[in-house]
Amino acid sequence: MMTAGQIIITIAIITASVQITRFAPFLIFPAGKPTPKFIQYLSKVLPSAAISLLVVFCLKNVNIFYGGHGAPELIAIAAVTALHLWKRQMLLSIGVGTVIYMLLIKVTLPF
Amino acid sequence: MLKKLISAVNAAHNLNVIVTRCKNAAKPVIQAAFPNTIPIMAGYGCLGFALGILMSASGFSPVITIIMSLIVYAGSGQFVAVNLLLSVFNPLGAFLLELMVNARHVFYGLSMLDKYNDAGRKKWYMIAGLTDETFSTNCGVKPPPGIDRGQFMFAITILNHVYWVTAAAFGAVFGAFVRFDANGLDFVMTALFIVIFIEQWLKEKNHASALIGFLLSVACLLYAGAESFLIPAMLAILLALTVLRRPLERLYKL
Image (tube, rainbow over all chains, first blue to last red; front, side, top):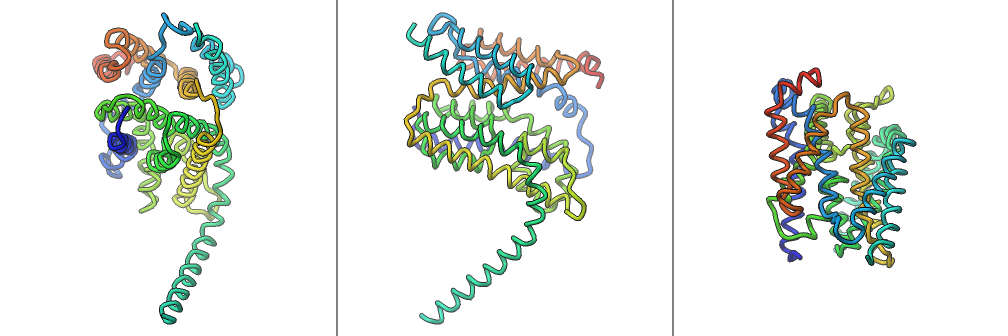
């Protein structure tokens, strides 16, 4: 656990980090100048890779040797995927998936 | 004493006149902008409420949730922040992770450079509020005739910001006062990224970058472990995309 001071520092750093990603383009590339080719290339390919990393990051603490052995995650992700491919309703997919997951870990937690 | 009171009343009256004038000027713009933000109101309403509950269930005061929703104002960024605030103190890791989570904002900024630069001083607030949802609205939307484009996008940004902070505040207060088994609620974040991943996957013609990101992340996770895989994974992805630039440009027909 962090101390109150460490929490405040972390929140300040998170704020700075998020806002840097928003302000950087406007500060680095003033109006009317073309963006470098490499940045244009990264802007095309990096988002997909970053989303993959985030999915893995969310699942980093899944332990296949303990608790639900990753089954609740697997089932809930399958439900989200199937529902989303079917209905393409973002909130529905997230809502149903989360409820399924919350119910599943109630069932599997004691083991 | 009386003079002071009278001048205070006068000042209040003047302020009132100014506020009313601003309100009257802003009213048509807000009215025109509002219908464009209704889907965002629903989306932010649910996600913000879930975030608020999660923050309270994780032991954070609603005040912290409200302040973070005001100044960080990033859905995925704030869900990741809950994890960061609950683990050990690691400022550099937090900085780099949030940079990676929100890197896509850079691309929104790049695509909005010209549109936002036309908005004058208002652009600085609009940049701070450039979320996924605000980007997607401001990107495609056309102001009705007679309404300035800059003011229109400014109004959309404000409305979305209000939805987010309000929903998070309600969630935080609800979570603080209502006993609620929030175990597993953090799956909202996983589901959110899965949905974004699917949308991205369906949209793109080539999946090379998504697969590179996935494989390198899993490899780094297995090698370095859950606590320290992030920075190596980010570096590996950047390196791979840089080295593979020529073939990838050909694949993506850039």
